[in-house]
Figure 1 (cartoon, rainbow, N blue to C red):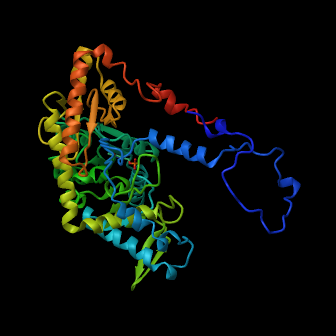
Figure 2: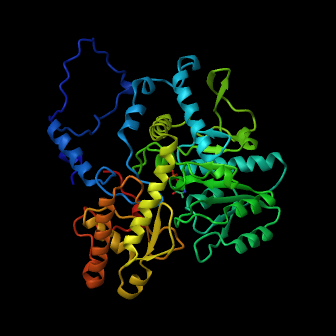
Figure 3: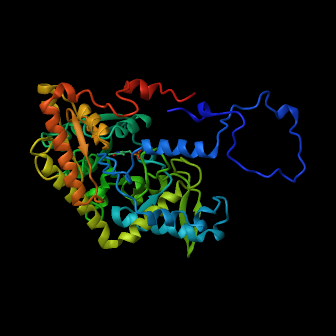
Length: 477
Ligand SMILES: *Cc1c(COP(=O)(O)O)cnc(C)c1O
């Protein structure tokens, strides 16, 4: 596809501005560029067609089933967009005095109250811009906590099923990850946990845990895990990216966690995937709140204000108070579902995942044979070994058929993994259609593996070198 600049024809215009009636001032020579900038000159028709063509090449939740495991690509009700784009919110400036913006501050405080109730935490902060950013803040808070107590601790327990951002966060905080191998079921192995604690006595900052974990399984020994870490003086961090499975039913605070991040852009209705603004809201227990990033929302009598934190804070991590329109969508989402709707949402997510897992388990090997939570992981290990058909081949075939492929090659502990998260917003007809499509592609692959691995044929790019594409992207014309 040609770029706008390549479609440019000198003299073409797509604006119809009247000549101005304000006297022109000449920009002083020292500020003028030597040559005019190279900008595309294009008609409005061509401009519209260009963006329309780009749009039709993307795939979003509005186009079809989007089962990207670990990402919770649910449908986001339009009412939440409407609420977050009310001019009373979008017309505000973050430097306005608090007396003029009590409304939005009240909305933020209310969202914090709901999320405290959902997570079982005592305080919330909306400053982190993403889940990984929330992890970083929380671990910096843990670090500050031990510094204040005069304890030198540097080791963080991280299960081998963890999202890559967990060990990355540990490194960025100048700490060291201690890898916790999973047991055969894919859960934290309690013997390994005890051994890791014993081997690192007095050095353990804490544990970072996702529950349900990235295999879509609820950690059965969760209370014992947090008890053991606390007994050793460590703290417990809950990666809340999978909250979609349990919201309104069970709370991280009650499982024994001290700090949690929520991906408001996953669980609580903000479209994501293209790198748009997000919010990795963090919640913490009372004893950690002095370390929260600055600024914080404070309330005196009934007057709300965004105030600087005390001197124990980990500091400022983003300008102003974060991506507030994401917070407003979460508020609208929580209020429109209500106290009975939120747990039902999670139960439907779990039901949908189990239904689809069941419909696929005749052909596909599952990483876990029992019931799953909101997602499940299939493995193409056997097919790869016996027929040379990999998870990637299946994913590429799906793209050729206009389908969005699930997450592949994550979690790392499952070979040839395909991680499917249907979410609660899909109906039975869609799930049945998807099951038929996956099963049909599977049969095609087994019937003719040589032909199957030639997918994709119909996509703009086929199989790029993924490392080069990520490390050395060619983004300039
Ligand atoms: C998505 C995800 C993260 C990171 O969140 P971002 O908002 O993408 O930074 C962390 N942990 C898990 C389990 C996730 O799925």
